[in-house]
Image 1 (spheres, rainbow, N blue to C red):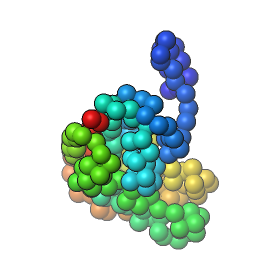
Image 2 (spheres, helix red, strand yellow):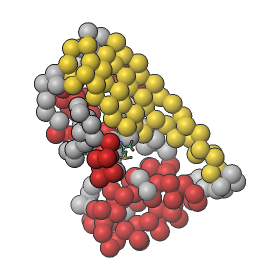
Image 3 (cartoon, rainbow, N blue to C red):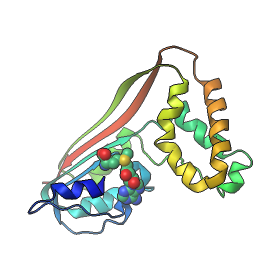
Image 4 (cartoon, helix red, strand yellow):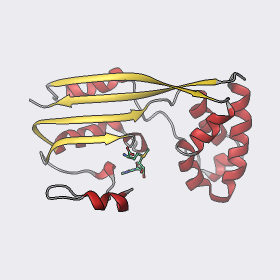
Length: 189
Ligand SMILES: C[S@@+](CC[C@H](N)C(=O)[O-])C[C@H]1O[C@@H](n2cnc3c(N)ncnc32)[C@H](O)[C@@H]1O
């Protein structure tokens, strides 16, 4: 994505790779915008404090991130991660609950001094052919981090995940996959 984005560079617009968890800037930006990325970083109170510091007076924060971690599609990954032999292979690592409740973000934005804010939770409806299609969906997102950590053990993890998830989801065709996402917006005085 970054390699392709270089073609769109223009005066005042450049693209660079960086760790969003390491953003360390002081009133440097009029807008901090993030789409579907903040959930990869842990400790959101600390992360939002750093992003807040990076925004100039009058500037804005606009974030979208998945908040579907209470769905069986996501819980099952952590449940399988707790089973042998995956637990040992992962060194006890879990995805966990790093994305907070919507109200917690509203409180956080208030405490961090944002003058205006709008926090919304939206359920995006995805009508899939059947419950097995959820495995493909999650395979390309959440499970990539398990794949990175498990290496050659990942195919066995995926098979166990598939079996357990299909026990848990209703065998409905089509299958309605409601996917929650959080939308945060805030402006400084
Ligand atoms: C679902 S993609 C979204 C990409 C893009 N923002 C978009 O809207 O199409 C999530 C991206 O976050 C990146 N990512 C994960 N951890 C990150 C980190 N600590 N710092 C910066 N980017 C990270 C991943 O590499 C991936 O490209």
